[in-house]
Amino acid sequence: MGKNMSLEKVTMPEQAPDVRNKNFQEVALGYTKEMAMEEAARCLNCPKKPCMDGCPVNVPIPGFIEKVAEGDFEAAYEIITSENALPAICGRVCPQENQCEGKCVRGIKGEPVAIGRLERFVADYHMANAVPAIPEIPKNGKKVAVVGCGPAGLTCAGELAKKGYTVTIFEALHKAGGVLSYGIPEFRLPKDLVAKEIENVKKLGVTIETNVIVGRSLTIDDLMQDGYEAVFVGSGAGLPRFLNIPGENLLGVYSANEFLTRVNLMKAYKFPETPTPVKVGKNVAVVGAGNVAMDAARTAKRLGAENVYIVYRRGEEEVPARMEEVHHAKEEGIIFKLLNNPCAIHGKDGWVTGIEVIKQELGEPDESGRRSPVPVEGSNYIIPVETVVIAIGQSPNPLIRQTTPGLETQKWGGIIVDEDTMKTSKEGVYAGGDTVTGAATVILAMGAGKKAAKAIDETLSSQV
Image 1 (tube, rainbow, N blue to C red):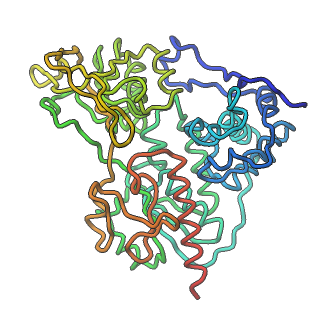
Image 2 (image 1 turned 120 degrees about the vertical axis):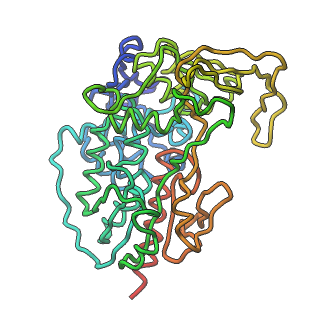
Image 3 (image 1 turned 135 degrees about the horizontal axis):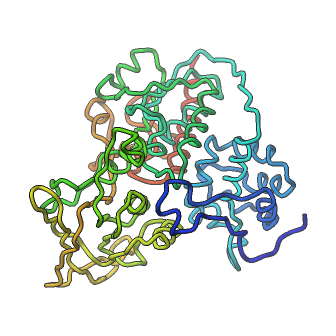
């Protein structure tokens, strides 16, 4: 196939908005073989490979795309997984527009190559068609513990297992996957895919122990005494932040974390088949405008809410969610109440009846360059709602820092690490992902897991 010089990406088929906003099946339906090969032919195979500079896990992007263009999808899969253990996940949830695709030369005069869609296609094709081989990896006799089975922990564990380490992941919840299982909705990331990607990590010889809360069931010091020669902490940022306004304790107010965990991990969307109910009124307000807020709003719509509002104190320009998520939310009928800051939640008989907001104007830019919202006096009004979901970010659970002497953390709770090696202030302990940065992306957490695995291997393999 010759080069495809079209300025636009090959369109990805999707469920229609008024159909998908009533079901939990995946929104984007994926490329066919022909579409993937046509899109791959848009890649110029630049000598400098700028797309790779934008990838936190250094996937050889032009190499895998070249194989897709040739129709050799298994070779493409081998190239991707040489650096990325979770391609079906990354192809779906990475913010490619700020990373690989953001650096693509084709993006200067048109749309960049659809690197994320191609990665997703290759991973899905492999899952559907390949017979997975179980690798034979000789053990090197050294044990490493990983705390948390999210993207950072899974990546670190997989990288170390490939090098012969005996790796055990300790996960607090009853299911592996971390935010991939409890945070990202089914319609954006099908859970059977997550389970298959985790299975691939287990095939490398990684053991996963669920229902183990490090800091309660056992401590990091206990792990060191049990013969683990290094510990990687990838416990995420699961502690929700609240608004600290009147009425937050009313029934019908959820943190986004609890709301999405009940729906995703505990399958509340299948109630009454499953025992986990989620009460969603006809009118729902989601406070915040990041990806988690979009997930919560789109989930509430699918659970039957008639009017779902995104309430955000800044303007359209400042919305932090991915453009694709905002676009999908608007298509599905989510109502955006921008430049509105919540100041109280009202209730009757203990239940939410409305959220009071005050209109905002954008003032001067702050240190980060974002224009700070300024309240408009006397502009308060109440949006009638029966459910409020707070999605304004989360921070690391304090359990690990409280039970690990010698572990230095930031004031807000993030573990302090050396950015090159992910080493913490405590000997033999490494950390990465949201527990270090605060809530960020899946791929950045994976990048941190890779860095830590490399540093752990360099340290332990040099010890006799």
